[in-house]
Figure 1 (tube, rainbow, N blue to C red):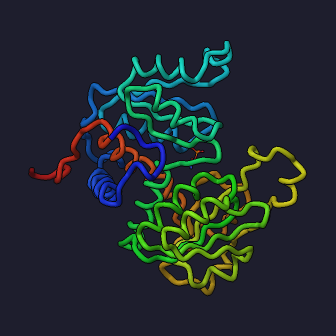
Figure 2 (cartoon, helix red, strand yellow; figure 1 turned 120 degrees about the horizontal axis):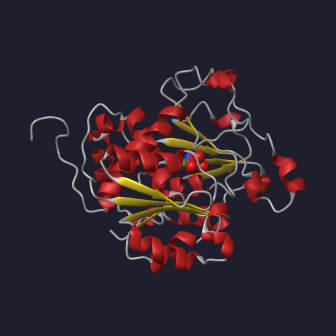
Length: 313
Ligand code: CP
């Protein structure tokens, strides 16, 4: 594999195989077992946009597997402020590292970086484009809870216009026969070309502004933050801020096995009263970022995860 820029870079078989690898790596992700599969390898973390989970879970994943990490650090203290281009930065980090995890505010930046690099690029989010490593941890979490990925009803809610996590996730879910409900304010609807693509692939897709009326039949409710930083006009943001606020009382009629997910950070779209319900999965989901990224790092670096981890071979 070259890199992971969008979910189109992975076949369904590869997705399942990476999720299987991730499952076997769980004791390593938890720190119960040390397995230095990536000893001698260096990850370059290039985050041109803020991140807590993606950056830190990549770093944890690499270190749990015995590898090392170099960070661009704060963009303000890097040579980016002197005018260095993305192309030149990538050319250089390509020489320093074996693999690069990258986040950039510009849609398409990860693809551009892959064209400039010899080492694999893992897209950790490109503007309002894609976030495929998030999708892998989302799929891991869904499979962990439901025992399968196939034929689930998934409600994607909130900012579907700018939210890159739901762009990548929706593409992946329909490949496993999931039904998708897209719940958003009109202003934040899923881009038309994505909806058309989902439908062209035979998916059952419903667009609605009604989140709460779609909770009872859902297997997964995936909430997202309204991406204030991507609005050109603050007045437009104010019109949709606080559009959905899920609290525990909304979950009374839900299926017992329904899970509430969120890529985090949250603002006000999930009330803390949900945290103590059996449905809340978002903190486990965030932890799963470590194990999913461990499996992805191994796969892209051509390192095989043993069939038995921590037991007899
Ligand atoms: N889920 C996610 O991408 O979180 P961060 O922005 O903290 O990396």
